[in-house]
Amino acid sequence: MLTAGEKREIAEEQGRYPDRRAACVEALKIVQRSRGWVSDDSLRELAEHLGMTADELDGVATFYNMIFRRPVGRHVILLCDSVSCWIMGLEELRAQLKQKLNVDFGETSQDRRYTLLPVACLGACDHAPALLLDGELHGDVDAEKLDALVGQRG
Image 1 (spheres, helix red, strand yellow):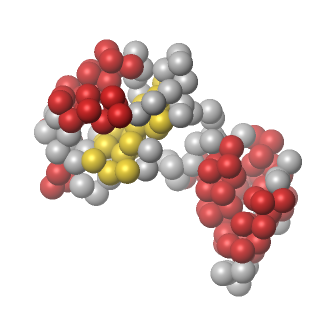
Image 2 (cartoon, helix red, strand yellow):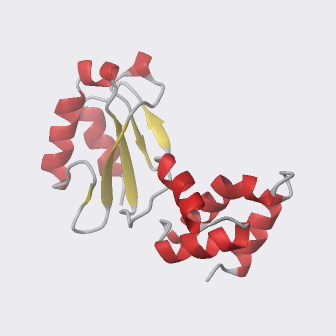
């Protein structure tokens, strides 16, 4: 199931490490970039390719919140739920997203456009509240900025 392109990219990453298993996070990212998420079948095949057990690789995959183990929408919103963001308006943003997109944490919109996920900290406390939208950090997010960000995505 791993494509020739995925295998080539993984081999390139493995060449950077003395142990091929050390490239497991990069290999997970390669599969996810190609497929949108890492399915159980993909994980098992990738684990075998890396010389790991599926349980070992799943432990790595589930440790990192940027590896998606179930399907996500075309756009992924990671909303920081740290204390700083909570104090600065996290709940209002969450309510706005829930109302606008009809999703809550851990859910994907029915049109499969958006997935909303909580994240413990984005390291942008000085610009709270913050979120990642499709991997791009946005700070000092208020209702107006959130509408503009979500409105830009197709």
